[in-house]
Image 1 (cartoon, rainbow, N blue to C red):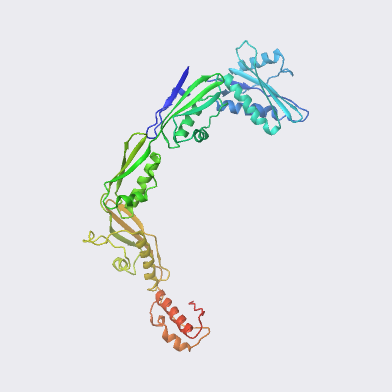
Image 2: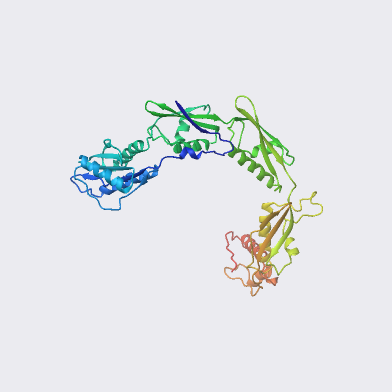
Length: 456
C-alpha cells in the first residue's frame, strides 16, 4: 500500500491541509524514577522524568502531574506497583502512566521503563536502553522516549529516504537539506518542513512526497521536478541601454537554473541600472518561453518610463546668502526649458557630493568657518525630484592680527607683504591655503625643501 501526500508548489505558495496534523490527544503521567547506584545521583530521580515529559510534550502529549501525595512499593517488579501506578493514572485522569528506574554500575548505566494504560488489562509495555558514560545519558533517554512515543501514538520509524526525478542536483546534496533521517519517527509535520527546505533550494518547481510501507518501517520518496535551465536571455523594450549593456549588469547567465529569487534580483539590477540615469519610474517584468529538454528562454520586458529630473533645490537655514547665490556654487541644477538638450535637471550622485563640498568651502571662504552643510535629502515625486539641503551657518569671523613666527629667511615685513590674507576682511580658508603654498615655495627656492608652515 502506498500512502501519498504532496504539494504542488507554484510561485512559492504552499497549500496545507489541517487534517494532516490532527491527532488524538493523549494524556500521560510520568512518575519519579528509582535510582540504583552506589553514588548519590538522587537528583536524577526527578530529572529523568522531567526530560521524558518535555519530549512527550513536543510530540503532542498532555502531561498531568499528580496534585496529591502517593506511596509505592520499593520493588518495581511487583504487580502491586503496576496496579498502584494504574490507579494513580485513573485518579489523575491520565490515559497512560510511565514509571521506571536507572541502574548505575561503575561507568555503565541501564534505563528501564514501563508504561500502561489506565484501563488496560494487559501487562505493562517494557522499554530499555543501555549506555556507558553519564555524558551519554540524555541521548540514551531520548532514544527510550522515542520508543515510548512510537507505542503511545502508534507511530512508525523511517526506514529509508529515496530521491527521484533529479538530474542535475545530486541526491546527497538534497539529503543534506532533509532533516528527517532513517531511524527517526515518521512524522508528517517533519516531512512537510523538509518539503519546504528542499523547495527553498530554488531548483525545483514541483515536489511531492510519497510514503510506502516497508518491512522495517516507512520508505519516504521525494519525487522532484526540476526547474528548467535558461537557454537564452532576451531584452525587450529598452532604448536607453543596448542589450549587451543590460546583460553585463545581470548575474544570471544562460545554462543556469531558473529561480524566482534569481529573476527578481536581476530585475532589481536592471531597475538600478536605469536609476543611474534617472529613470526612476522604470518597470521591469519577465516572461518565460519553455522549450524542449527542460529548457526555457527568459525575456526581460522593460517599460523605461520618463526620465526624472530635478524640479527644485531647496535650502534650509541659510540667511547670509540667498538660495540663488548658493545654487551658483553647484554643478547640480534644476530642470530648465532646454533640459532635453542639456543636462540641466540631471541628478548625478557624484556631482551632488561635490556640490556639498563646494558649498562648505564657499562658506569657509567667506568667514563662516563653523558652517556645516548637511547631506542632501532627495525626494522622488512622480516625474520630478526635490533636493533639500540643510545648512548651519554659525558666526562670521573677521581677520584680526596676522603675524609670522619661527625661522624667518626674510624679514617679517617682507613675508607679510607677500601673503594675501592680510588684505582680506573676513577669514578665507582658500586664501590661507594659497598663502601657505606661496611661503612653501619661497623656502624651497632657498633650499628649505621640508619647511613646515602651519597656520594657527
